[in-house]
Length: 152
Image 1 (tube, rainbow, N blue to C red):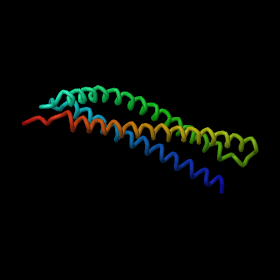
Image 2 (cartoon, rainbow, N blue to C red):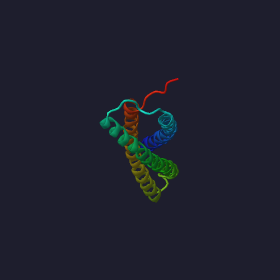
Image 3 (cartoon, helix red, strand yellow):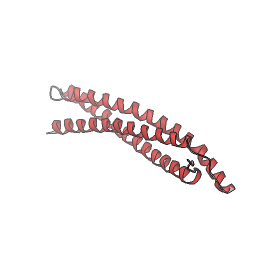
Image 4 (cartoon, rainbow, N blue to C red):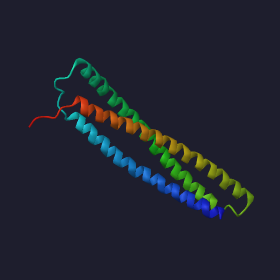
């Protein structure tokens, strides 16, 4: 029963890792659209000096946030690949658990390493999602307050 549960747990985690990768591609696409939108907007009209200062400050923080998100995304992708590899390695040794006590120890060690890496991936991904949420809100605020539509 334990082997079946472990096997199913590993398979579910593999599916989650793949889903994270697919979600990442959509987020990259959305970020690219936001960047294009920011670059193609007109200048703000009739803003007060305070509003203009806020817009300039917000405009300066967006590229910094974008770089931080890109770095965190790259780290997350690398860790997701590593988790996938560790999951496969654990599956390989888990199959031989019943052969001997040494095999059981190897399986236990691989399971601990895999579980630790999964936890680290979830933590990293959660932080990245929070950063993306803040970035998206900042972009929306910038677009709402600081950008006017071009007249045709």
